[in-house]
Length: 112
Length: 114
Image 1 (tube, rainbow over the protein chains, first blue to last red):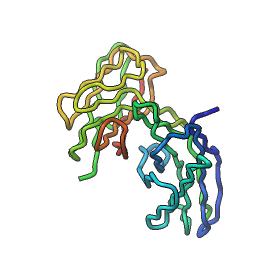
Image 2 (cartoon, each protein chain N blue to C red):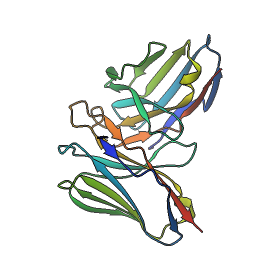
Image 3 (cartoon, rainbow over the protein chains, first blue to last red):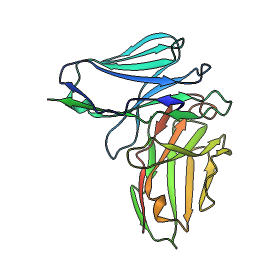
């Protein structure tokens, strides 16, 4: 079982819709979770971090964490064509080395 | 200033060349990272420096040699690379102890090995 799993997509949503991106992780003791957006040929850009169960909102983005079910999600409201990118989920490895474990990323396409 | 800078943006080198990638941050971060990213794959950790000391080496071949001259600078020295080393090389930094929080990435260096 992969440590951090994401559906590779592409996930296609119409402009103005809510895009829902999901990420599951295997290690129960993971404590820190991050969402990055990466445009083709560019570097990852941090969108959101979340550390506690529940929702965290920042503008059109909402991160949701459920540690009991071991998933973290990212909702993008009012999706725009400019949101079309690959979204990477990262989890801090709890092994003591504090490394990021990245998922493989979900490619999002917002259709105008 | 929340920026990590990297130079050069693009680099083409032969297998016998020696070159260096440079990374700089002025956010007062004490952890800095080198990642390698191939197309359609997530970033792959190579090295981590914490307080200017090498903290993690992910079994990277010796043809890649990292250096941290001070808390703001990180270099990656390249020698005798192979064509399969062609990739996007990303530098990142974070505030606290290695990996303990949000990492901020530089724009990357696109490396092509001929």
